[in-house]
Amino acid sequence: MEVHRIAAFSQGSKGGNPAGVVLLQEARSAAEMAKVAAEVGYSETAFAVARDCDGKLWRVRYFSPESEVPFCGHATIALGAVLGKRNGAGTYTLELNDTTITVDAETTTAGMIAALSSPLTNSRALTDSEEHDVMSLFALTPDDLDPRLAPAFIHGGANHVVLSLKDRARLAAMSYDLDDGRNIMRKHDLVTVMLVYIKGNQSFVVRNAFASGGVLEDPATGAAAAAFAGYLRDAQWPHNGYFTIHQGEDMGCPSLIKVSLDDEVGASVRVFGSAREIE
Image (cartoon, rainbow, N blue to C red; front, side, top):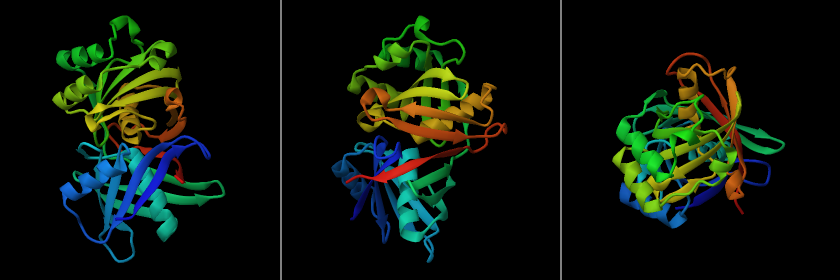
């Protein structure tokens, strides 16, 4: 298999979250794809098989080094960049395990830009068990939380928990035990836990723990960004139709995620960013 290595949500020649992209001639078994994803070693690798003759419809599955995930935003952006470079700018339809989405590819003087339309979104308050386990994992107390955004279980193609911290330094100090995180995330059917610092109504700094996939942290997490957008909408946050997420700063891998949304509760959102090939 030929693996394309792409950093999604990059800022120029720096940053972004590395993803593998494999365009297959025919479907492969889950075991084969999982093996390749583990060998690639990135947080996710997207595997795509064309469903039509003109390369506009694709069956897509995502694998981390340790598990299959139902939807991955940064690997979708990376896939859009690869498809755009191969087949030209335009809209590509992606059939996932549980839903169908689209990704648009555009070539600019600065490189490839891709924009995905997410699965439908929803959110709810945390259960006592979820909140206890996740707060304990990061050694957080109620005093660490920003009361403007309550802890929540959020979904936009995959499940996440979001906690809003009132202190940027507390976000920078994020640490947790990987094995404990894996157990808690799998117990509560979570892909990541998203820690957020509110810079402004349309600007957030984020860290995403991804122990469920065997990765301590993601430098850019498009699926969580989509779920977070749905949560902001549910909470009637003054987003004014768009916001930006700054992620990876504390890892030395700055990434930029842009999100646009309307006020229709539960609707898909648009997540877009730049992508660059990894040499």
